[in-house]
Length: 447
Image (tube, rainbow, N blue to C red; front, side, top):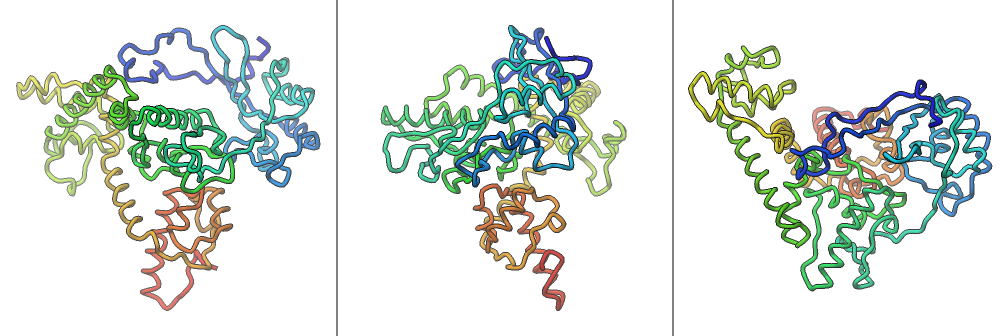
């Protein structure tokens, strides 16, 4: 009620909104006619001055030499202003709390300033000049158990029957806690009735990546899950989560019969649709008549299947289905004329088709990495933004700190992603080739 709407940028949701579960994909979201828009605004120079002028009022912490060890990728307002003095503003997302309340959560303003300072900070932001605070922001500093003392089931190695999940394992975030809760709770229940444990591998789920990172490497800062941490992130998509995990859950007694039957129907539809796309082909010249996006080079061969054409960047599944239908009508083939890809499987069929070549390359990269994981890294390699522009600040910081001697050692550093390991491996291959053809012993990456 107190936000100034004309000063805010509306951030509407998806239309129509996608449901969380494929069980509801054909019905749709039940309350889609009652959606509320979020909005965004920005901090100002006045906001930043208030933050810096009052940093002395922030509490002392046990960790980080008194500065605290906060989440690297979800920093407090003070940390953002302190770390990025060159930025004159930071985004604040305004998220309504629900349909039956006027409360709005300002995402991006975390920090334990005194309440009167928090109010001044809020009112220094465009659109929030007349707002009041219902619940002040605060910090929580907490101890955690070294997750390396846990099994992949999240059972404590030295306390049988004790399962841990959430912040106590060194993570931060709702989803991270929920993911661990599923595994810890499932295994506690399975153990209680004498059934086999339930674990997920890194190539099966982000839950598997998260837990393996924690129990294998540990963490020295609040851990968050990112797609970049996964070697097989192209396979770990939200559209195929049920295909990857429902059967595993069913076998462990965690998924009911209805969902299992629904999965079987979805998999059957995916397989049928993919088979039609693989079997349907036309001469390259006929595809080219369908528009500019369908132009192909001679090296693409005389004939191309619908699946191969769909893997091209600017072509959609709907376009391919229309072409198949047209060709079916022309040939008098009722199966092709009536070919449809239902909303239940549309996203998955399109994603599998689009990513097929990349998935093959991903497998090749990981096979190369496994083969050469103990290759030596030069002792004088310079980890800098100039030399490795695609590396994150966290990766550069930790590679410089730990100076790993091998690719395998680099891969064990918390926060160093598979993409970076593959890049380093390609760098070593290039370096080896250059040195074999030159008398030079130093290249641009070394000092």
